[in-house]
Amino acid sequence: MNFVVVRHMYDSGRYLFLVPDDVVLEAGTAVICETRKSSREPGVCLTGTFRAEPDVICPLWGTSAKAMKRVVKVLREFVLEWPEGTEPEEDEDDD
Image (tube, rainbow, N blue to C red; front, side):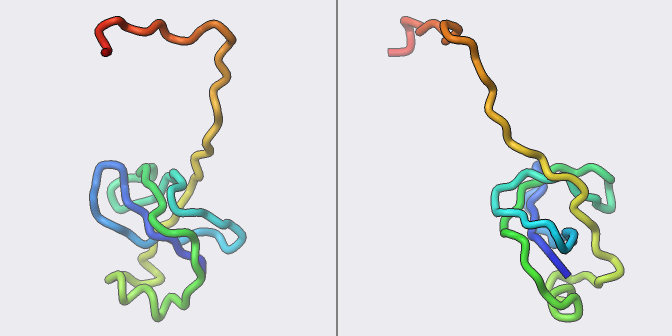
């Protein structure tokens, strides 16, 4: 099975989640996860995806393969394009 460790935006805990076998995530990737509290909990990957045997990894995280929650979305980064000449004016008080 394919796993990743995620920290939720509003929680300092670290949690283990399932990821589809054909998906590769890197540390720092923003994701949405299923949790006991919500079907859409934002978080950040603390590790890249890794393969492990559920019988080995799940007990280390205090869970079971049957109870595992999943990453359901990956939030992609994109650069905002600003038209030329729209830079903010410098504030004179910022010295």
